[in-house]
Image (cartoon, rainbow, N blue to C red):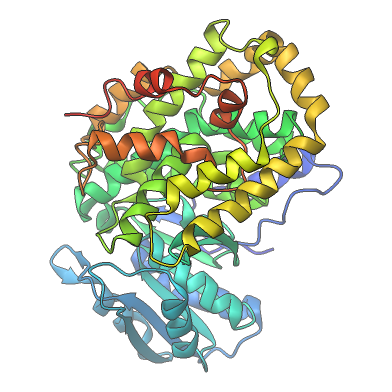
Length: 475
């Protein structure tokens, strides 16, 4: 597969070679991107990127191009980025710009917006999206529906890792769900534009990034007990490489420092690639992510503004790290305490947790469908649970390599300028709300994580939840 013209910080050819060496069975997904360009002038590479993408797809040199953006005004050194993008293409192509607006302050990737974007790209040969994570996810779905026509991402913030993967996060029945979509063709990450983005977007991206130091343990645990078959040593090796050392560069993020912005953008791009080739976001989405999804679920059901995903993940990563290190460093996990969950009791707990959200019970029903699937798999794999818990100390050696101490992550998060407590999030999350989200996080979806195991061992008690939330609930 040809690479985008120009030098690159993400060596896709090298990554493909490394992945192939560790994946002789061919289980991993093919890395189907032409390039990821991260530089202080990446936006100026658009014309050549379009040429590369059209040539690779067998499209005419003069193409119909649709530029998708939301209603936010994104500036680059005093100029509107959308105009800079449009000017580069208007002489060589037939260009049409479309602003997606669903009436919300920020765009929601729900079915109405996905349909809106699909209709807008009806006759396009190539689509360019300008914006952060949600806009990219919408573009990936729309172009996937259009037979995977080329999609070029002009990344404007280092807010999430979804710019370089092959899935999209969407809203279904008010619940965030990750669905298959496609790889973007080319990602252009302009460091100047990203550095000038609102600081909360990039500090949010750093919050997302530090889940690299907690989530792989949940993925590995789910694999050990037989509930996740996507685990692969090649992906884990890349994750370990990316997380070899805690990020000591985080104190330049809020100020838009070039080095910190570049480091963050590169780290998020690597995260996205790993989850994409792994055919799952589970490798980077554990306890911390599901707590964030719980916050989003509550906000959405109550028609309240939804907070920045990464900022929430960053704070929740402190909770996840605290729990994981407690399970790793102590004799907390005692095989004598393991009990099979009761399906009827669990259904009542799901109903109690979510019955106040929405008026028709759809949210509680959606959550129970996923939780029920998970519990059925737990029963089918019970002997593996007994084996894993019985040899917990042996597994802890590996878990410890995947989880940084909470104090280490807190220091890096605070240095980034991002929120390090639930109360400091925007919108602010009260101690009661944070407790609800944390206490019930394992009841929302079908992925298995440490909280599920603690619950099955009778350890997910009020005292444990309060202990896990110490220092992150209030300012």
